[in-house]
Image (cartoon, rainbow, N blue to C red):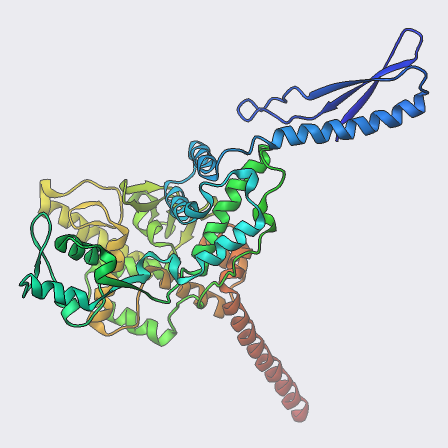
Length: 474
């Protein structure tokens, strides 16, 4: 709202009004910017009351004009401004993997929003974007190519019997086509190039019906909202259109995958036939509920043998452009100290002895590493290696599908069904709030509550029966 101040002459008469409009703060220094100012002079013969009323009208008009001038700065395209926002976030310490996920979402929205000016983007444009992202055409891997009869005629005319000589050398396999199967667009293009014909004359595109997950579409919305929200903060647009758009339906998918007690027993029994390194890793996943990256980022100096604790304060990550790198856990609350069962600590001790023996055997081939779980020749372990081992392990022993996160869910279910409160469970998981735990494991909490309620009913009935028996005896 504009600020109005009256200015008087030596005789005490109001001769003008100073109108100021707040301009915000400098994004770099944080200092308040010089406000927009305007002076409205009182016409001769006007009374103070009339002049004040008119000055208030002039202030409204001036403020509206200022806002319109400010918002006219939203002439840059969404693509240009999105890159600016990404640069700002990176400079302010955005995690590398978060940047990668943002850029993946950015690739999906730029074909639609990229060339549009910020000031032209309306909620309707975002609604259409989300609808398009929810259609099968949004998936790059949905398109396949079906051969047309003209291809076989062309091959026959050119005397091609087996594979087709590719342009630039090599061969293009025609085995799938001869079996009547579809091929990927890249393969169809190679065949078209080899024959010197347009791909459209030889193949017909066929689209599958798979769609992007609702989570992927929601991530695109969150990115768009972040970019346009920053534009609103910098007063380039009057409001954030993403707040007024129809949010894409968020389907959290199936319930978290966890193992029943009998399944867990089979897994633990099968583990007894595996190397101590993997026995220790899987047992620690289950006992601590830590994430895959947290497990592989655990260092020996964070293991307290006397207190039977481990400290989770870093995680191992992988990115195609960086390779393996160490970073912080998911959130600040993910930094935590956990008490570990004695049996799991015994496995860690045995694993440490085996690791020391392996260092002696490999000698100079071993890469020095502070991590509890390393690669075959030392150094950090790639997170995918753990998942790959679990896949081979489950096939060897005919077990249910295994993945590192399933053990985190299993620990949570065991604790909840044992009557452990949600606050303690949330801390052990390293969630930023209990609300996060409730959102993910709400169905488990409900089942656990029903089970606990049933047990309480049994306890109360036993107490009543004991009292009745006592009265009968007396």
